Picture 1 (tube, helix red, strand yellow):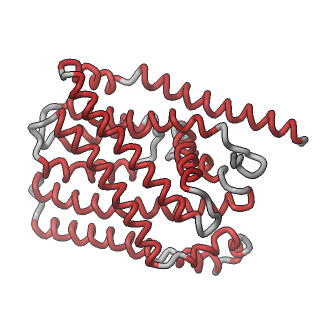
Picture 2 (picture 1 turned 90 degrees about the vertical axis):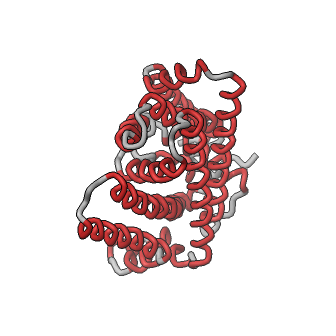
Picture 3 (picture 1 turned 30 degrees about the vertical axis):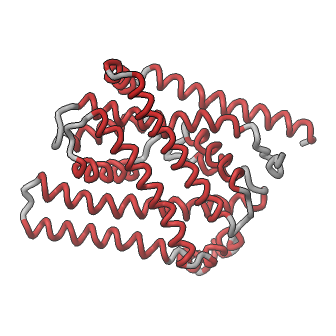
Length: 325
């Protein structure tokens, strides 16, 4: 393929990705009843108050994805050195790809195409390490929250509740041990004859020391806190009757259930709403407000970043090094 043909094909592919993403977003936004409920709910609220709360949640969104860029930069340093701005570009570009792919798989492609071609497969492995770190916290806090929820709202026999707590502890411990010993994956793959020949793509897993993994996990923790704080702001604003402790208990369960189910980012709002209504019915009957809170955060955290990331799609070079200028 000639250089000119590569450029033409690359441009068409970028246009197709952006057009497809915008079509997905448009079709879902105009038919989303949850967002319509949110719009109806805030009509009676002073405009200045709406701007204030949504503005704070929007800023937290930027902080959240900015922290993800910092995490990505640290992780990928084992493979290739990139600037913080390049990391930010790749994160937002990945969000555009993720919007129309199952389980956010497109996010991998959106990021690794900002790396040099020889390091892109390794970039996928590195990104998985970061995702595992986020999943560890989701599972640990989710397991704790579920135990508290069961204790408060069910009449489970003491022995069964004790068994549940032991199972939750073992579940959380497994993920923590696995994460801090990610090098075991390298050893397992090296022991398999078929995968041994691909060791250049995963051998660097052995380079991650526990101190570095701990730092990555701390970034994940800050992201988790930021994300939780977004929900706290929205629920305390739109459902002021909810107790602070109830929100802190139920939000980790939402995260846990969401991470456990296969989904598409654009359809994810349905899963979030159903999950939210199921668990929040134990503490409030304001179903419309609950759905409105969840829909607004979905809009700010998923849809808006995907739109912003469409600009960075045009900075990709599928056949060579990323455009640096």
